[in-house]
Image (cartoon, rainbow, N blue to C red):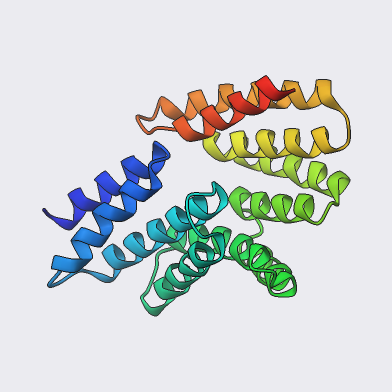
Length: 216
């Protein structure tokens, strides 16, 4: 199967929350690969990094091993020459993985470096908001999430705007501001559905928010 089709199938499975299946498609491709462009390798490594991140955080295997695999693939992508969007996606994942591997100073440092280099990228700010929440700085997380939402909306990046609302809801819930959290979760679902009008899926994001809403 041509690399373009393999990567499209792997991305589709990832979007549906089928991370193990997505990795299986990529593993099969790597086992038979004879030639690939740098861009194709970067995309495959990027996807595998995120697949392993979600496999780890959703409890689908040994957490530490899967986080180490996520770090390996994110770092492996840097052996090639990624385009800007690939770079941003990798940089979004790496600080989260480092934090969960208890390398918190490295996670903060990586985040600071990324914000300096990509100050107008909403997804880079979204990673910062998550780190703030994990550090139990909920008020700061709320503020950063507002920046995520506003910046993403200006770019019509509805998926990242949805992340901003969802993560703001998570921080508000921790602060006991349940009604506001509920409003943000509902808004996140709407934004994810707006994103799906592009033809791409946000199913696992929508399903995740639905679970949070039902638990309030």
